[in-house]
Image 1 (spheres, rainbow, N blue to C red):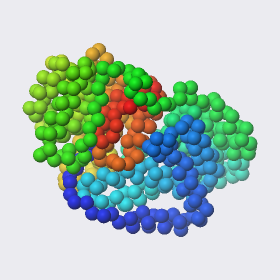
Image 2: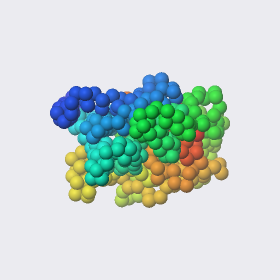
Image 3: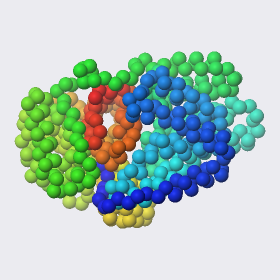
Image 4: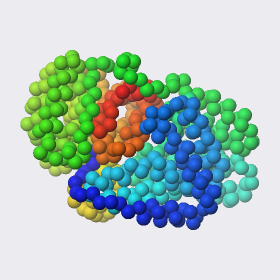
Length: 448
């Protein structure tokens, strides 16, 4: 969920991106620019293939291995270019949120910042490799290769502005190779040895990183749902319509129709997306109406919470005569909480968010029980954070609103990250979404 206001949209100017690309071209040769662009393209292929419905394990395996092989052979200039374009291909959609604030002019500036940020991160890895090799006066290629490979592992733990969606091993989430750190280390070791010895025979070491359970995309009638008594609701409410109070009665009526339909279908639990009730639900008469419905079905829904001091983005859980509220633990950088120092944070909130205050996060992850089954609470962005998987929860309910970033690849990348965490921690994830399809992820397999 993001804080927002709605104003007329103006056409963007792409000057900042053009300037950045010009500077990159001045910094490097056409050949280096082409290599960096091509490596980034290979590194991003798995996202777009999945988005377009052409994701195949063999193809994803080849793309991922080739991207890492080519990157490890290159110097810091190509690493900078590769990082910049990976930032662009993976995260360009972040800038789409500006259109909802009437600041489309800021879109190219944001994209340029994203490219520069990830370009510098990748450049640092190659620069450190070169610097250490130079200081130690080592001419052998093994050490710089090992340092760069180690850097590719460490990048998973470096989160600019607390945004942790860059995980290089994610390239293999729908491949024949695994996504665990030890499997990723085997893949990198095999590539390093192949480059060092100039023998592709070492690539066979990747067999030790083979993924036993291959990812699949199954339909509802394949019966992989952990519980067919659960109804996941998908809504299609744009950001503009969500905050238009004149449309709330019709929107809320439709949600209650969904609840009534789930009751008729003998479901025991219905899950509604993030902030489908974009009001302070704890201070609304709708709370009583939802509690009345909960006598026939358990309800998990998103809504705002107000304690008289600060707003919260929350999950409301209705079970029988009980109402519980689970607040968000990990907030969206800039969208819900400003990660900048206080003096800058206040200025950004004043200029970009009409002086709106930051949301407040809960200090601890929250679990709740429904029908004797324990679920970890997660709201949108936080479901893709390692923190939410502390203790390896068996089940997780995720509520999302992807309206801020659609149409784009954001829902696809989010789904791939949930597959990654589901496989890594053995968590079954029930994901109810606004503006993109809802689904269940079990052992990395997606059921839509």
